[in-house]
Image 1 (cartoon, rainbow, N blue to C red):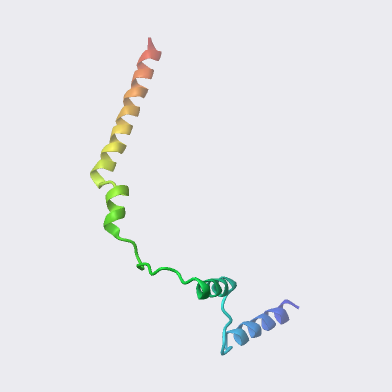
Image 2 (image 1 turned 90 degrees about the horizontal axis):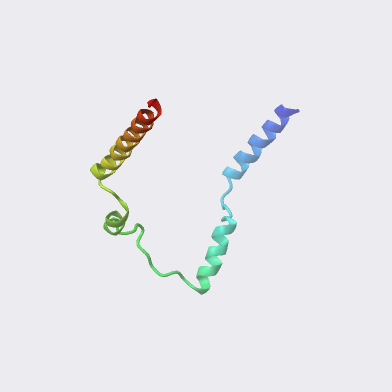
Length: 87
């Protein structure tokens, strides 16, 4: 029975792929209807990378210094706790 279902499914997929006209998705139809009445403003394909890079990105050495500083502080803290516990 499963072989028959697989064969029917394969036939359906081949039949659908061979169709001349493919219906757009529901989202595409919704946007087309919305944009027919109120078209969107033109926008660039990608945002300006300089604007984003200045505010959100850190340089590599700053990130490395932050990580090493946190690790060093943790080592000092654990050493202090171990030193206090031994007395």
